[in-house]
Length: 182
Image 1 (cartoon, rainbow, N blue to C red):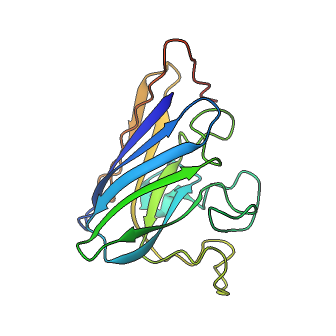
Image 2 (cartoon, helix red, strand yellow):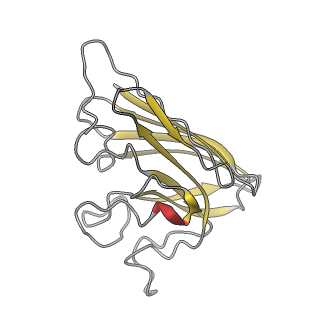
Image 3 (cartoon, rainbow, N blue to C red):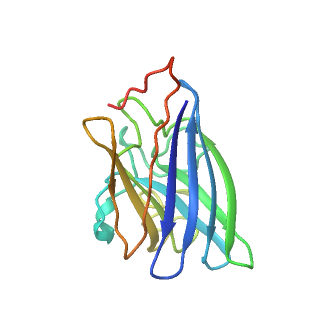
């Protein structure tokens, strides 16, 4: 089993914890709790780069190793990083669970070394008819993000962007199982 934990925080008061778990070659389960967001739907994606040198803007586009159009998590044709929307209640809190087979924690298309981004607006899932629907889901600005990486010696190496958010990732491997971190 491989696990990752993302701790988000932003200058706008967004805070939360997102847990990623993957057993073997199975799907990745994402569970999270985020506070400080406006009520409603917010786009939630894995972005290509773990670079936060220019805040969330430097995380690049949605993780899309197969060069597909933007879509919903249920669509066959979609970016791997398209995780749809999280729902935020009137109290500004989102509690969610997402199970997805296109965001592995190990292997050549691993999301390790990339970034998780929460957007200001709802993701239209590629079906909104807006010029940005097929590339970003027209999900608006980036309100929180975090990047993580594993160093060559197998120890955790963190890249933190404190202005926008912070993230901590821990990989746990069963004694009888080796994680392929390529």
